[in-house]
Length: 278
Ligand SMILES: [Zn+2]
Image (tube, rainbow, N blue to C red; front, side, top):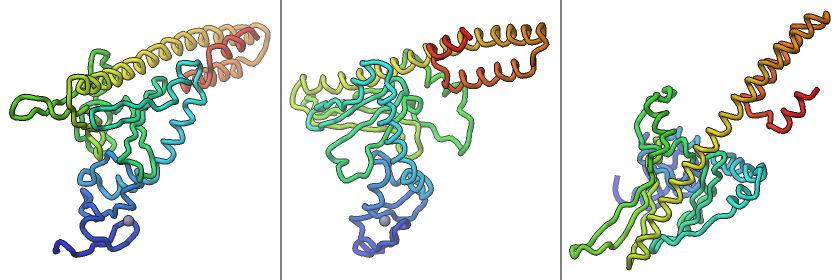
């Protein structure tokens, strides 16, 4: 297997030389054209053939869902999140946007221009990587890491020359995904001001994660309140039905359906309030 030998891409079967292919974790080859249908931040030596295939099938939908999530924005602040904000991290220009309600963000770089999708990342996966067997249930300790309000998982690493001057910085975003594990944004820096941009960006992301957790807690509390109200309404409806010779089973069934709708987030507070007045 020499430097110039060609290998077939396991997806499109094109024969490509060494510079136009990568080796997957499962030992097959993927050509650069097929690789551009996967996540730019995925490392092919971590990625199995199945995982690459999975990315090719899901990235477009995730991207579309993320875009659509801004259409459902309930207020101006959330609509404002739709726009990418540009950050100059030293020599690296980064475009970032985040929907703190659904807890997802996108990072776009000039180097990604030939990739088909701007990948979507999720705050519930923004924890240090740990290998898990497939279909393993998320451990309680990991759940705790996801919901930890005090954690600042996004950090900055500095690289110095022999004289102790910082020459480059890297924003390190841990990611609990077999193919990605961490997202690194490295740029060369010339002065203190350029260094600070990295810390500002890391802080922005950590704060967005906290905002997402706060939204989640708020929604949870709101859901619980709605469930309590539904239980008492259902009991009252069943009691009324029993007293007036109505259909008790139907009243209970409606209560259960309502409970499920609340859990799935189908019932909004205003709408629910109107329903209760009936
Ligand atoms: Zn290919």
